[in-house]
Length: 113
Length: 111
Image 1 (tube, rainbow over the protein chains, first blue to last red):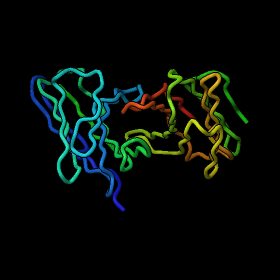
Image 2 (image 1 turned 60 degrees about the vertical axis):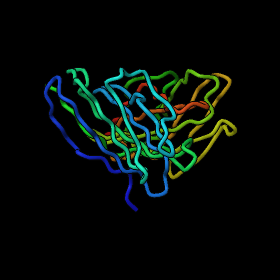
Image 3 (image 1 turned 90 degrees about the vertical axis):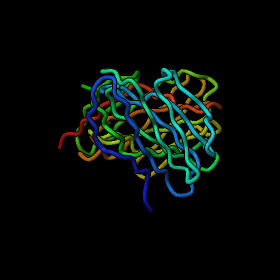
Image 4 (image 1 turned 180 degrees about the vertical axis):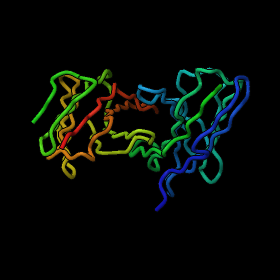
């Protein structure tokens, strides 16, 4: 069985640009969450989507947005990139009710220059 | 085996020792807890979870202990191997949607 897949694996962007990161959850999982992990720290919650609806949002600016598609895959969009947005962006897929069994993908390493 | 009473950022053990990694969580309303292992350049890997109606759960070579009275979680790794070297994070969740991660502990296993 495929786990959580994320693309791309690495990305370099310039300040002010926007970026779209993609995630496919484990088959049968209807919930996707996004986390940002800055080097040396634990992951921080950005969004959770369940059944295509936003279920929760962390303390991130409006430059960050996300959506979930009918096949339960998800996109994270970040506009007007700042140097401080450089991080590992992680997607987690969780069990059908969205509350347990969080499994992470390998992440997208975003570097903003 | 090596153990830590309070959170320490690093833990060094010898191969074959038992390791204990501790975590203090913040929210008394948290009812679900997960331990993750993260190797360099990779995403967190699920190790074991526990719900608040339990105080102990065992997996393969790992045991998680939950003490709700003092809001403390620990991960015990039996017969630690070099492949166990990684950063370990505990995470808590309440009725909300977010996993809240603790400070990681870097486990170094020497052979």
